[in-house]
Length: 569
Image 1 (cartoon, helix red, strand yellow):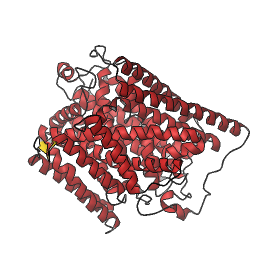
Image 2 (tube, rainbow, N blue to C red; image 1 turned 180 degrees about the vertical axis):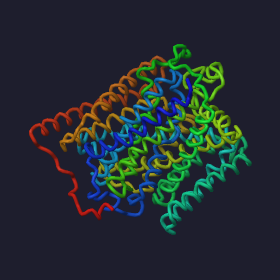
Image 3 (cartoon, rainbow, N blue to C red; image 1 turned 45 degrees about the vertical axis):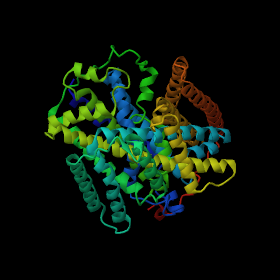
Image 4 (cartoon, helix red, strand yellow; image 1 turned 90 degrees about the horizontal axis):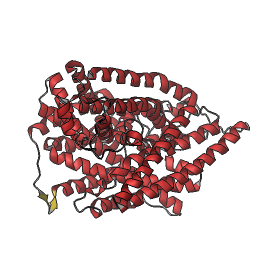
């Protein structure tokens, strides 16, 4: 099989999804209308609520949700063969992820920028909201703790990525000033920012930075993890326009350039896919493809974390109602393209099947390392870029995206802490909430493992928790649509599929953890399963009530009156 076939078919499907299916969703399901005032205008505060150019906001949303997961998931899942991974990524992106991200963004902007967790209280019930927040908190804890480990390992294994990783912060700060303070044209700003970023990659490739085994009395991995959390905590409290937005935007452009390099290399080199279409000889210990495929590839097909970002930060920055289609749906398309690129790199980036099998000798043996190695080989063959520099480009891309996800993840964790305080009847300030979020993540990282890698201990639950959250998010959206008399099938079918697969996966993993006597993961799995089942029961009851009201002709109007068009401009 020629990898060019996968690239062309995948790109065509995603283009069709954006230009056709997202138009249907925007017009018939979510009824986007620029005469609605968005929360960014209504509640503008210059910190979290900031009206933002849709290109810049797309960069924030896309890079916040992308992280390392759309690389890691597909790079692991191809162990079952490239066909299942390819189908789940392409079909999932078009019919699941884009609809989910756009829907979460729409629901939040129609409710003053409230998070999906808080919306669950309005549309499902107070018990559902409390349990929803538990699931979200645990998911963010996994993301923040595990991504810190992923980044630290990449900074150690790929020292050429150190300078561009931290230099990108300076670039982002300057880009933020250029956009909001100096009002420089966005195209000019983009060219300058991307040129600076890729110059840093060249400098990093020329001057790798390898730290000694211990720094300030800490193992180098622990030092990087502490530094990353300190940075993420500071970044999460800054106004979004200072660092978060410009960093995410430049990273988004950088990723599309990186993807352009990868896909152009595929077009020129046309490497052969050496991995099997369906792998019947999986290594011993590899779990069943059903349901694990659908939770191993989460980001890149559909991800509950996206709904948390869309309703947590993105909705607070949406300038116009119709921008939601580009920011939400096309943001999911960007992640799908990254996941598709990961599939191609990890199935066609090796010379022979034996080379591929040497990497995929065990479940979870693939990952970012396989993506960097395979992708660098394709880029070297296609464009003649030295393999070392190509590896630096791809590794830096992975590090920057994981870091931007940490930025947003800590900010979202702070929002969840504040929302939990509201539920308990007391107000928690921004600084205190951030300290609590960091303390919990660091407590897991260093409490469960002395070297700071404790986040990886609960990472096996990420996929199932993430997909479960996506299903719960879709349940909230379904209730809203039922109340408004809108079509629900585009949401209801993915909802049933996701809740079935994620609940099934939680039960399978529960047995695995019990057999292995891993009581920490067993307990967490049980807590998540009970919370999820409880929310599902509450959601079904809410949907039934909304359906009965709909049949009786009781249709809710939009929460916000339609105003003069200038309010959304």
